[in-house]
Image (cartoon, rainbow, N blue to C red; front, side, top):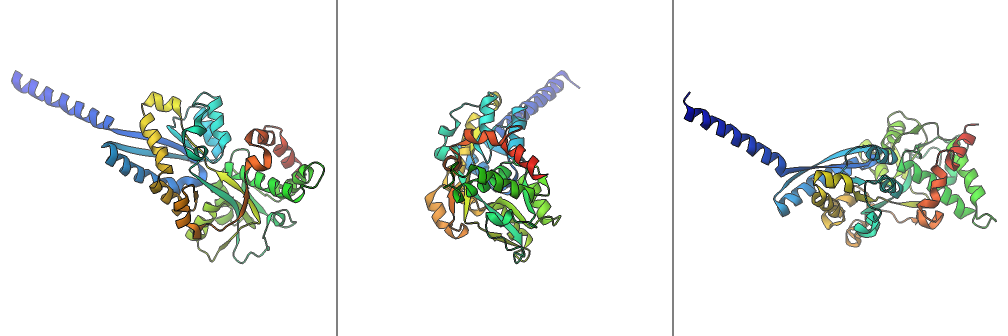
Length: 341
């Protein structure tokens, strides 16, 4: 081989490596760490966003997913899981990351609606024909009724079930001297005495109820109940809307520390902006989450039965007031311990 041939081949190889490197840099990847029952939603959001970003910026972007119980996911990010964005189902999980220095305390002000692109509610899924006659929260505390919920200590889905039941009991007993707190505590104790197993997330609870045929009622988010009824067949399950439920807002945030280190701030911000855009809101509605955009919500009104709701702020005074329930040794632990006796 002549010197000219040698250096020609070396140059070609170097150009190939350089081109491959530039190509690799041209495609950005994001990691979205999310909660258990949002899997199907983001399977549709991700390619739609990638197509929109490619059209607007000319850049290829891919989005990877991680799912699990919301609080477990937040702890994983706090422990080092490199999430560019988090899309959770309760604000405390993002506030935990603020406390750990992963993102700024003003995360709620960075996007509309308190950085929550959609809401959902807690509903009941029962066996076809509703053989136990379950119509409202009181029925879940009746003797002989087995209730499936995920663990409120690690799952936002389970936490909302607990808070919805507590808020319902408060409303029924508001005339009491303590505002119904003692009655609410006893009611929730009775409900959790009927829970035979506590799964680590909403999808695990779904599996227990639908595939292991355990329980008379599954309390879960509306979108999950609709998904189950659609995919597993309306001949097996019915959805029951209680007289009142809790409004569960699903907050989102860029994980500043990770995005800055990876150089993905612009793409991460655009990804979350997409959730609030009409195209993203339509996808959200198709997956039976309640969109924030009033026009999109109106066009999909038939998907979402009207129901009276309350928020954590209205019933409890905010998430800070709720912490005493779920702290180690707190009210929830005391209730579960009493329920086992």
